Image 1 (tube, rainbow, N blue to C red):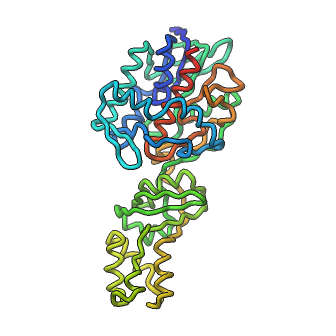
Image 2: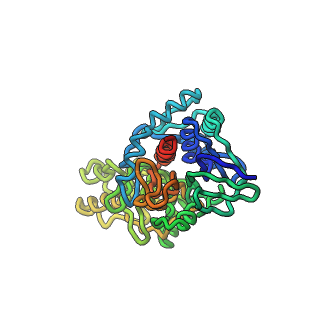
Image 3: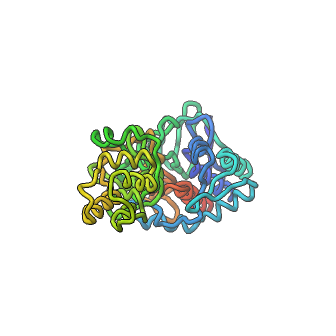
Length: 390
């Protein structure tokens, strides 16, 4: 069967559905194709099933890209308050967690239901289990699936990245970009746990489950949040954040006790200078298992103030070189993607292929942890939808 539409969108995730809603709201005939059996599959698992749908402190500084200025226009055109207005319209209860993160009170299903209802209201047609077999650009774009052919003057690619392949992630968006001669920035897993080297694994791997607040640094970037020791390496918000900036063979510097001076009572002679006292002090500063292991691996040279000061600094400058990452299977997003130099920042349309748009995770714009990647999906989808509404 042949379908003719004004706007054809590949991908029924956050960005694709937002684009569809905005174009549909302006009277465009919109069709959305997805190879999955339901819309918003990645939305449903986000935020532990409660969907961290935006962040009220969103700014361009919360994003990585080869061109850090590219995201500014779209983010200014559709703000967290704009999406929050949709949440309120649909009477979805939500709450704010730390650092401006907004979550559903009940379930991520509320956000998917919101998108589905908005699509229904605006006349958007959604075709599921629609695996694309071929894309051609003649006068219009022609997309062929197993059972149908879709023809449209505008094609929007919202197929996501490579992260979480068990949810259906594929390289299709990048392959399509290559088909049209669109440049790609190298892709890598981002917001992903890091792996211990063999030595660090032997020393810390059995501490899995231990969590503590840290400041982690890599180059000029740093984050202060919780760190979690796993049976393979390090995770938790601080590590996921820094992983987006980390490159193979780079070292991380971790402050295990930010704003604390655990040896101060020893240096000021307020307590006896011995290992038993040091253990009690460190157990107040760090989780017990980590404190005890740290003392085994880093015993004091002696009890002079100079040595105690150096001992203090060891805790604030733990240096590790990760062996790698947990890969796309555990990555929340994909860094890299369609080169932003190929796109118009206000519309997400390709410079060289009029009518072809790329939005969401497939583009080389990657947000920090905490709702920023959803905000990029909403904003880039809205920008494309607005452009297509003329």
